[in-house]
Image 1 (cartoon, rainbow, N blue to C red):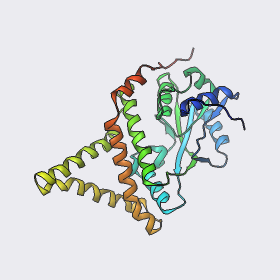
Image 2 (image 1 turned 60 degrees about the horizontal axis):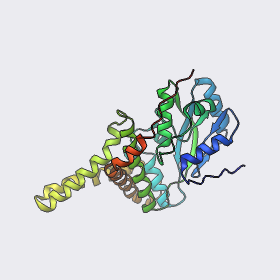
Image 3 (image 1 turned 30 degrees about the vertical axis):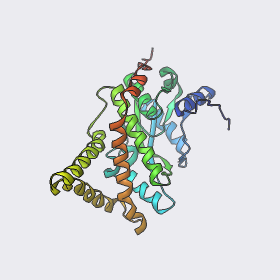
Image 4 (image 1 turned 30 degrees about the horizontal axis):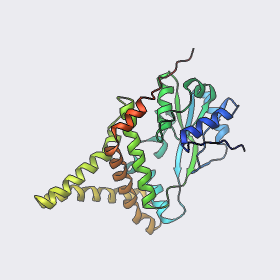
Length: 274
């Protein structure tokens, strides 16, 4: 194991430094919260060859050790929690916009100049966008699984998802047309719930139907998500869902344009293969 200095402290800078220090034709990204399943690398290399993809990845399989972590894991692997993202909820092997972590052909990373270091978060989505824009294939396969340990408390989970929302808005401003209804659901929910509370308090009690309806929806959605879990974990799933939704939505809504402008100034066009 070789350690590589990263004086910036930024994730994408660390990734680029590690890629530069490596020497093999396949580069495997592994983050601190992840644990690779048996034969992960051998399977990924086989899939690279079979599909001709530039990057392959699989499931971000969230697992918890205590009741709170189990609740968050259930929320993170349910459609009511994260929508229909295959690397969260599973699905058939197929081309994808992005994948969790990734096993890359080195030539694809070098061709695109690595990760854009202005992207503190969402740097994987942005790099995969450039790979796809240059005609490359990103491939998802459920054969690949990385066990992931969720954040240990509400505060840490809220910060994580606020950052996700904040940077997803940067991506939307950076790459026009990359947004879809799944990404707009959390900020819409935040605005609707806030409006409902104000309306209910100032005008008519009917306004409380909106936050009440949201609460009923996440409670109902937590029932199938928590199947097989201890009661204490199942009771925490609505809290995890609300934290994820509201924090992501708030981060998206409050993401400053100045941040997007700074990132846009660092834009790297996709580099086509010669």
